[in-house]
Length: 142
Image (cartoon, rainbow, N blue to C red; front, side, top):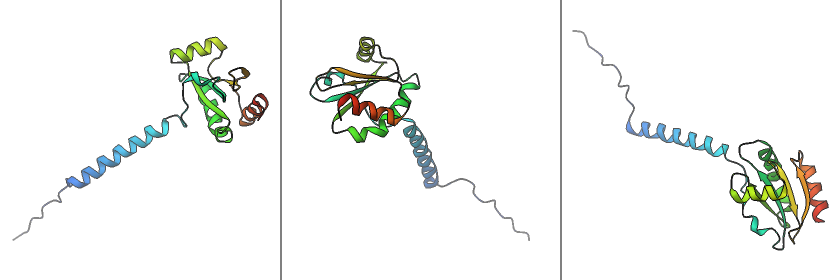
């Protein structure tokens, strides 16, 4: 008499399916998280002239100039965090557009204000960390 062997069961167990689904969700979440902008910058421009120096980056998320300047700001921010407040004027928001119009600023423009709210310097899409550091030190006397 011949024995018939049954083929192995190719269905995965419930815990294997859960593990695969969890891994997939974690992978997608990690990808999305890695694409978010680095560092968080307040957009409340009312703090200009309130007793602390302020750096404002005019940024339009549809263009790359502001994003590249934000990367530079991320690198120098910690050096000046005690004496300078870093803000973003989002050109996608009405108050950011009004600010940009008032100061003739476009995507990637960096504006420096002293503690009294007087504009002391403007940089149009700075290219290096050193350029930003130098401007902050000169304009704000740091």
